[in-house]
Length: 209
Image 1: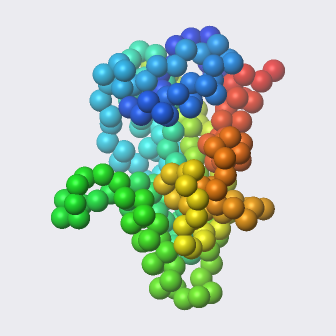
Image 2 (image 1 turned 90 degrees about the vertical axis):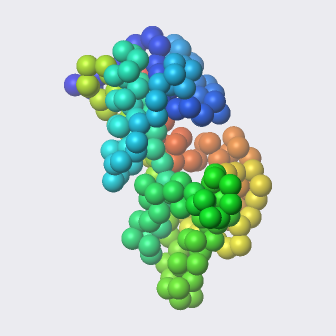
């Protein structure tokens, strides 16, 4: 039997205020008060998993254990068919600048260029199919947990287009569309994104009749 959340405080396993706001707004109609792991001063665990599920569970379980409250974490990334699913769980790592490349931080233009360069090496007929994946994990302090997986199928385009997205959004064209995620209004994107798909499954199971 699936364990369900009640009207309670839920820790969102993030130190990102924007992510807390986005997830909190999605869950507000269900009587949940969301607080971030960052606001509680909880450390960020090392994401050592080899899959999105593993990393989401690492973050959710660490926050639940440290806070004594149920916790929600997400892990997501871009998976390119012709690159055997890469960058996958290393999606953000591909954007990390090394010390010899300038100030620390993430350079998404560099990351998009790396993906495109690898596809170009495969030739003009390379398969450009890909998908964004998102896993949401809920963990309770007693060790119980459950996960929800979402996907957004699409293809990669080049050069990047649009200014409204982030990450790899400017090169991702969702299935059935001609615009990239970065050319979609945020509300449009949220309605069809991999995170929206995962949240729809979470809401149906956790709060459905």
